[in-house]
Image 1 (tube, rainbow, N blue to C red):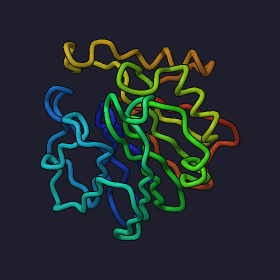
Image 2 (image 1 turned 180 degrees about the horizontal axis):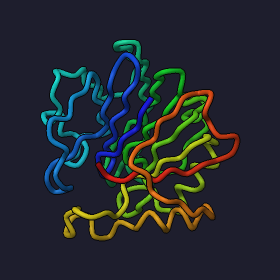
Image 3 (image 1 turned 45 degrees about the vertical axis):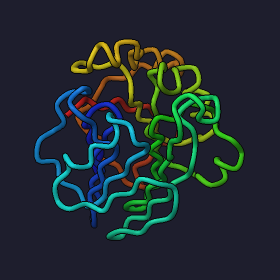
Length: 214
């Protein structure tokens, strides 16, 4: 399957039977790629930089809450979490999505703001690839994100929700660069335009993949 980064927390996951887009955003985050089509859209929480489903063409099936879903051969399980480290009292709820597509188990962590509990880890299960916020301020910072990586123990981590060109400086100026997270993990990474992955090509040790914004 193919992973493309649409910016902020938005990705396009293209599999054999369906295409899924995560957390589409509005213009304050930047220009969302035109004519983005999907069969499924996941929304981690109802904030303007994650919930712009209207920008996706193709009459997609929208998943915006915890639960179990099956759409066009893709399994999606939503697990409740929080947007902050205070039980949601600051920024509300967040949904972690486990997406099973083409034999891979992928977690999109939305705007996760805390380390995971044992019940959450059990609900998420074994993961191959994790799409994780790392920029701090509104979500996990680099150190916390590294701790969550240890908890989840995936083969591949793809960072998101970090500082990048095009973000509204008033709203997102305090987000950290992705390099801060890479330094926390002791990794040096060259960004790539997309990731094509299958179960038989998974690495044998932790790999961080930084995707270029489409």
